[in-house]
Structure formats: structure tokens, C-alpha cells
Amino acid sequence: SQKIEQNSEALNIQEGKTATLTCNYTNYSPAYLQWYRQDPGRGPVFLLLIRENEKEKRKERLKVTFDTTLKQSLFHITASQPADSATYLCARGTGFQKLVFGTGTRLLVSP
Amino acid sequence: GAGVSQSPRYKVAKRGQDVALRCDPISGHVSLFWYQQALGQGPEFLTYFQNEAQLDKSGLPSDRFFAERPEGSVSTLKIQRTQQEDSAVYLCASSQRLLRGLENTEAFFGQGTRLTVV
Image 1 (cartoon, chains in turn green, blue):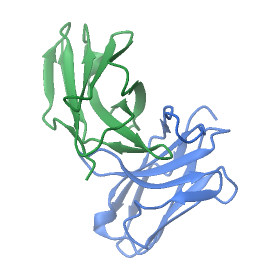
Image 2 (tube, chains in turn yellow, cyan):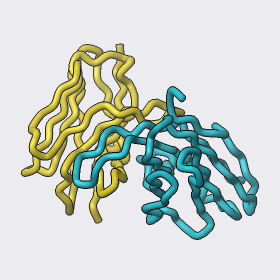
Image 3 (cartoon, rainbow over the protein chains, first blue to last red):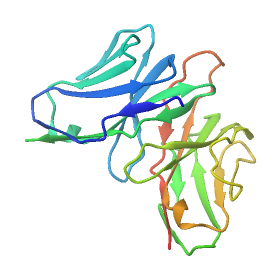
């Protein structure tokens, strides 16, 4: 099956450090990947989209990379803050915009 | 409206009861999606509408699940004879229509309806 895999273990880091989250895909080469943030009791919120022909995309403190050789996308948050604590979801789009999500990685930033 | 609105926010149903979950998408958004999210998991696709047309219902887990969007705006997800395994958060999302073959844009999600079947 065409899976999106994310580390299900929570990532704990200290405020000010860079958080790096991983998204791996198998059996498929997505044309693009999306990253979402989800807070408890809320729906996912879109953060970034990266196409397969883009190696890197940035938005403020966020950076996403896409390595088609490794079949992997990395999501970085620089100068992390406690307010960045949330679950981060990676998703690939298919056909008419249906999204296939990974399980998400929970990030906890400690002051 | 300002965002995607879902109601109710919480629903407790007795096993065997029918439920109806409502989604008000962002005004003007042609595409509407329903996802199911189990605890600790990512959202899983259920069904997709483009205007009033249901173009993909491949994710609906059984024939007890039915979705409609009769006028191309508000959508309802109905679950008949609910079972305990139906307990989950049901998310609705909408997005602007794009031509096929191009990348999609972001999907805007509602807060979800948490369904608990007892």
C-alpha cells in the first residue's frame, strides 16, 4: 500500500533548539507533500506544501525538505517555542486532492 | 463563514442508534471532504464531494455510512446502527477547486465531531 510513515514517538526538545520531524513514504512517489499542525481537540491546520521538484521550502521559522532518493521529507522548526508544541502531520495528495496522512508526531517544547 | 463549521462538537450515541453529523464548509469552496480520526492516528479519508457530486466514497468503511451534499454547500455524514468501532473524531475539510493534474492547495479543516458509541 502507499504509506506515509512518521515517528509515532513524541519528540521532546528545549526551547530555542531546532526540532526536526521525519516523514517517509513507500511504494509511491508523491508529486507533493503537505505538512499540517494539529492541536488537541482541533482540526489540522495547513503549514506548508512542497513539490517533488523542490528540494526545500521555507516559511518564517519553518523549513521543509523533500528528498526523492531517500523517499523522505524533513520538517524543521528553528528557534522552537513552547507554543510550537503540537502534533505535526505529513500528508500526500492523490487524484482529486484526497489526502493520505501519516500518524503524526507529537512535539513538546520545554521552556 | 470564516471557517469550516461542524456540529455537534460532541455526540454520544447508544449502540444501534443512527447519527447525523453536519459540516458547513467555507463559502465558495467547491471541494468537501470527510475524514475519520481515531485516537493517536492521522485522519483517514472517507469521502469527497465536488459541489453536490460525490466523486469518491472509497473510504467509507461500510454501507452503514452515508454522506450527502444536496445543494453543493452543507454536507451531512450519516451513520446508521452505530457500533463501538465507529467511535472517533469525524473531520470535515473544504478547499478550492483546482484543475486536475495540478497540485492541490491547502485543505481547511473544521474542529471535528467527537462521536462516542456506548
